Image (cartoon, rainbow, N blue to C red; front, top):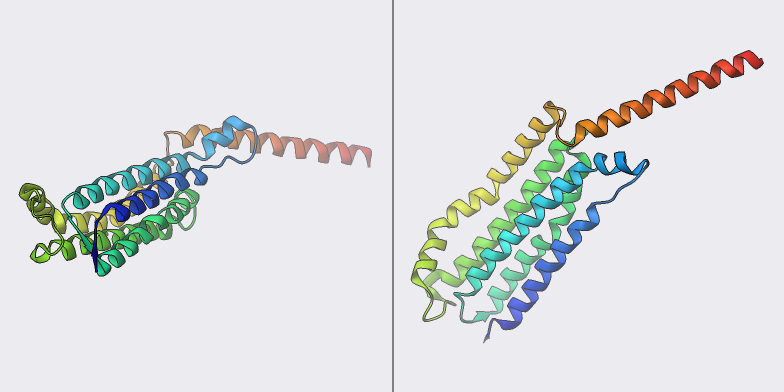
Length: 214
């Protein structure tokens, strides 16, 4: 069974759009005052930006591949659905990374993020390789330059989307935690310290008052 690509492209675009939109749900403020609460969630902003750009770049690459494909069959549809399954899953490790990047479990969160991108890269390359092998599903007038570029970059994309991403994220987590995050986090930490000190002084004052009454 072979069919046109229009419905597949529409479905894929929908999954990409939903996955990118779900990322914003990970950005939630909590606590007060509002100013310090907004500063405290800086990891959510960073994770949102990185993942949104990542999904956008994958979508561009997917669009480039689909532009060279003239028809699809059942196995290609199945491979593309598995690929989209990982795309839709990206918001979950993004949330883990945002929650734990500067706390216990940071490296586990980074590894989970890298694993998901690894599997996404593997499936992206599986989709392309199946379509391009023997020009099985490529258009008759497929752009040879584009096909050659995708083939040439296939191994690099897999490495970049896999272990390379995972290692860079883990290194960034270590670097971030080691430097105490001077950009964005330091003001928040300062406010938290001031708030904690004020609460400590208030408790001390209450204890002193209670002792005086006793």
